[in-house]
Length: 230
Image (cartoon, rainbow, N blue to C red; front, side):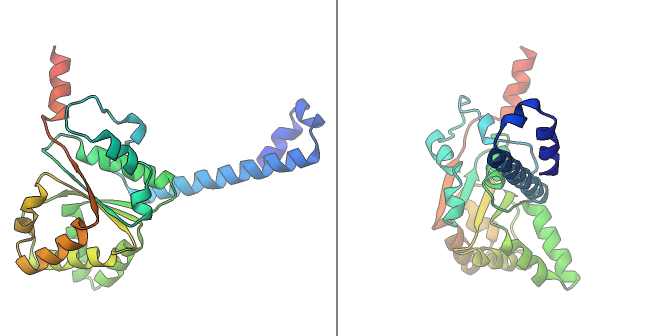
C-alpha cells in the first residue's frame, strides 16, 4: 500500500481523484499483492515437475484426450468435491504434463498441492518409518488438498508400501483429492498392489469417485523429434 501511495503522489492525474478513490486503489493493490504472494508460496510448496498450464494444452494431437472432460477438470470443481483423477496411457503421451497443468490451476484456484513421483514418495515414507516420523509425514500429506502421485507402477508394491498407500487413500476420503498417473491400465492395478484384500480396499477408495483420462497413441516427444528431422 505504501508503494502504491508513492505512485499516486507522483502521478499528476491522481491529484484530481477523490480520497475515496485513492483508498480504493490502495486496498485493491494490497489485495492483489497478497494474493500473488500466497500463489507464489503455493506453487513453491507444490514442487510441480513441469511448468505446465491448462492454457497451453494441445488438443490437436491424436492421443485420445477428452477435451470436454479436461476443461471440466480445469475448473477444479472435482477438488472442491474431494474427487480423484486417474490419467493412464503409454509413455510420452503427456500424462505428467497434464497432471502438472491441473496442479498449477489448482494452486491458482487457492488449493494446496503436492507433486510426488510414486517411487520418491514411497522412498520418503520408508525413510520416515526408519526415523520414527512416519505418522507426521502421513499427517502432512493428509492436509494437502491435492496430492499428485506421478508414474504409479508397474513394479509391485511391498507390504509397507501397500499399507502406506491404503492409509493415504483412507485419509483423503471426502477430505482431499488424489491425482494418479500410470502407464498401467486400471485393470492391472490389482497386480501392482499384489495383495487381493488390500487391493480391493485401495482401489475402492480411489476408483469409485474418480474421473478418468485414458490417453493413447505414440510418444509426443518422439513425434516432435521426427518433425524436427523433416
